Length: 295
Image (tube, rainbow, N blue to C red; front, top):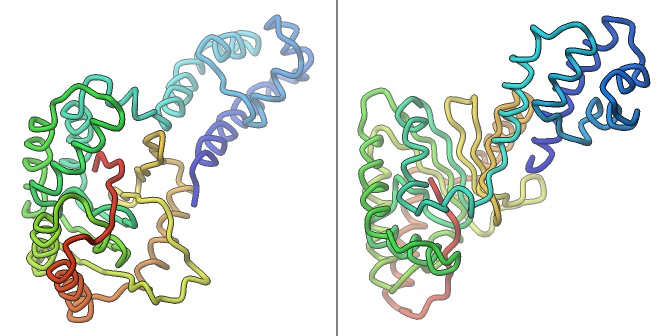
């Protein structure tokens, strides 16, 4: 699945735009570098996506080509690329509540949601207690300000999207999510019961990939969300990745289709959830861990 390659491909696309601008005016990379006061290798790195083009670089590049009017659009593209990869410490520096609020406009605008998870139950399907356990773990692990209760409230408010007219959620979970314990036994039983309730909502299509599925074609990948088939948000260990490049989004959609084909739905999915509930009822010490999640 795309991760840092998304940023590289976006930089490459911008580099190709800059190369076309240079070639339009018959400039060699050496001549453009001379006009900008750079080493020639800098032009090559930017054009081939190996280095980011800063706003100052783009201004110099377009000025050297006599195309100053093109600078504003290209700078906007470059800033968008910079915003693709945001470290959790930057996103959460103002607290977990702020991180939750930062994605609200996207959720309000989106009509069709696709989500895949191998780590945690996705936010819209979480219970309050499960959310509290997840966010408390994040706060402690990352040494953040203690605004967990406020952040929990924000995430619970966001769940209203599940019942908003016109919104549809296609969610695929690995069966292992059901057994990854987050908090005490009773928290997990309540959470899995919530999955049973959510599965009958007309706005939700819930699939679960059984642990014995043949994964030779499609192994588990990082948790991700797709918004109206136009944007993907991916949760990495150290950062939050936003993918908007059409080719990259297409790759996520293709893999989501493969994951969906592995999933059980309807009665078979409910049977898997019920089996997990039974396991927790019999064994309160089931192992598990919490991980990052802004969704």
